Length: 362
Image 1 (spheres, rainbow, N blue to C red):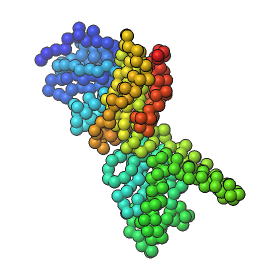
Image 2 (image 1 turned 180 degrees about the vertical axis):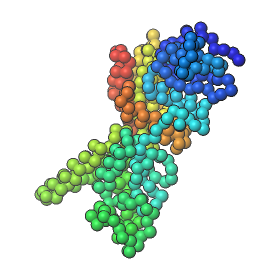
Image 3 (image 1 turned 30 degrees about the vertical axis):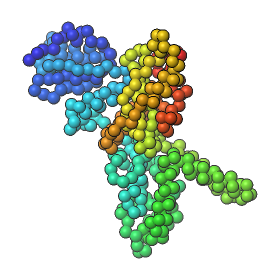
Image 4 (image 1 turned 90 degrees about the vertical axis):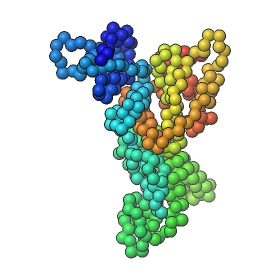
């Protein structure tokens, strides 16, 4: 067996990295570290005395490593490396926790909504990711108060003899279980809920504001006051929605993080809930190049293409996004956008300047 040359390790940078130690007859050892050289010397160096600390000196046959400059980059490199080397167990290996989503179940004749942690299974629309399951449930409860959609989770067999529930008695459900309404009328209410979720509440806010203004113009002030109270209630519900929560299939944004190249930043686009290949963007043009920053950004963004991913991979990508974005240790900037042609370039330039260690961006 070939031993690792410690003198070669001594030349490695002592910076954050994801590394893999190949071992003889065993699975490789994958880990992250904030000090690459120190960590490898501790794993592979000689010990002056017996120790309980892990040592791979007698087993190691080779090393692979990738330098990283941000926690997001570390998470993504760690994830991709684990997928490659541990295809059956990488989720457990990297301890990936799936965030909560609101699912609008469309496979039932009488659709309903509930909270789940696995988007993509069955017919439905998914909205998230939320910070916690509790915040997703709080938002869903508030949203359902605005619509007459059922909250029961059973597969309904409508009948006039169905016992119903308290929400039907309180006129907070159309009571399809008791055949008070049919599938078509119930579907129209579900469509309103779906539009509310898809537009982040703007569809209902606009309709309520229009009704309030019309009633006010017609001097029906009591009715206008009720609509205004409803408008404020909608705003209160929307304030409970976490920052990232939107329809999963159209969740777009770009993370601007530090790069291992001190003259650049990394742009990591998320399109349709899936991470694209990173772009290493130099904050200053090359010598002799006179291309404006805005134009260089537009050229870089125009080359971004949505990656082909499975539903499972999209759920994993969103879990990594949620872990980074909702963490207390998040660094870098996150800029959401509706589509690439609506990318907020002015805000992106500011993010480049802020992320680039305070360097002036031309």
